[in-house]
Image (cartoon, rainbow, N blue to C red; front, top):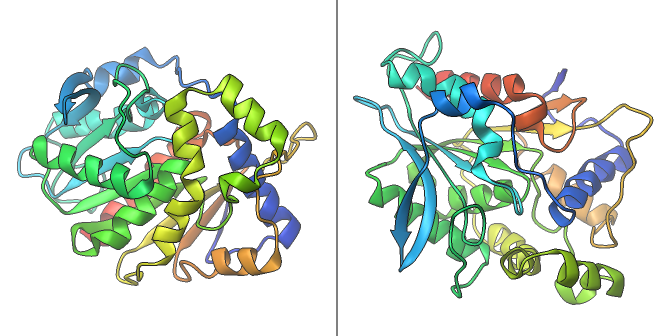
Length: 301
């Protein structure tokens, strides 16, 4: 693992990172995780209702909680993918212990599956980032999770968490982006190649397709809002070193220098952790995600 204070990769490496992220967003994602002990430690998911739809969620409260850790999944992924991470954090929360040295109070935890994923019912409501952030915030309030929030988002979920932090900066203590997508990286859906549009229609659910079609607009919504430099950011980025790692972007990635420069400049004070992993860092290297979250807890206490 290498840690940098800012992006140090070349333009080619930089686009490879995001091309791999996009590949997983558009390809079939396996959300299962063989970590039964971690799932047990993280308690059992339950069903809630939001605007008439069933939403599967995991809500772990803590006595005198300092705030709430909020987990947002990538495209088509289930919250089960966070099992090892949540299990490591929740075991201590449920026992009323400190999560890590230097943190005086525990944090509550919240994870869920967006509509059309897992046991969450599909919806006809919009699937753009603004609606997804609004629904998430409503779910948090419904379960009694008051600010401040420490937001943790993977892939497309990282883009949603960036929007949440910009819309409600006074409610957010920190942002951990796990191989996240960033504004402007994905083209408008009408600019996708025909073969990509065909594959999306054939292999993806309608819910997933609607979210992917809204990625560019969600990125524009992120860029339209100011960023609060007081919110600390940690970015975990996958740069696989194996010879078998091949970057494929399905023709949907903006690789121009202006886009690259804009993304690099988004969070100049962010801590960036580069890992030899795969796109599903929270499953392949959960300890790195747990460490990033714990370090963030210490920095915002």
